[in-house]
Image: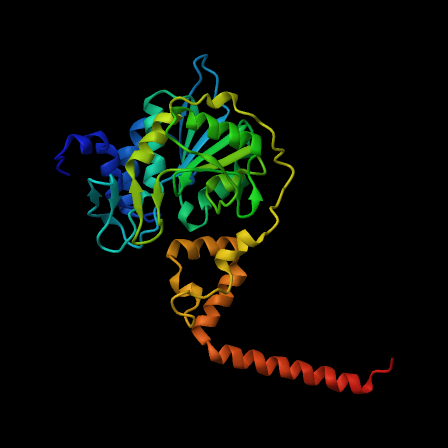
Length: 345
């Protein structure tokens, strides 16, 4: 990419640019090439085929009790290289072909490599197969408890937006409020970032570790509209996160959540409203599902799959479904009417 202005140079990083150019469906040749180019030079430890692990020990040589997490795969349906575009005014990466950018999770992996280069103590886990349901981390949780038991914290870099310190994934608490607030405060110490505890998380690999590790979270990395052709990456947000992560005292954050206790968040209208049977304000005949982004549908598939199925059926079958429901209701009424004639009270 040609750099034309000093302002652009401030937000350009060659490694980040190159990491974004690979389409990386799990098990593809381009994912393997991406790992070979960006991860293998750090001589990672392999955990079966589930993850690559790079460890930066504490200054006294002891092992850190914090895991940092990202993943190597993307949602692309085909492998190979891709053309990416950059808006020099907004400092945002995007694509013009209507397909995913893959900042989810090249952005998170880039932050971790920057932290490794800076010597920030931690165990850096580059998970495999996250986009197919967290298969790599699920394998580690199932087969490698001895690896997980050392950790007090598992911090993922795999969240959209610019402000989230995730406290719940899929409605289940993954970290304490005390930990989330302390981490948000530490990240905001630069006076620029505005991180806050956020209980609307969906899923990333650290969700698979909540039964073993007390404080598991996910941090916003500056991308939006992930899993879609409208995906973007706001580079200043990502750079600010990187800079903040180099300052945080990761080893002395609070540890309050008991991983043996599963706490499920109660549904409120705020949780349900985005997925309710609402209608577009411009066209009362258009179901809300028609206007949802792919990312919103993926979120809904995790948080409220039954409602998603109902919405899909409503759009597919429309009046046929309503007629079938009407016939079903009438048949039930007939059954109870017949029973009622023989009931004695």
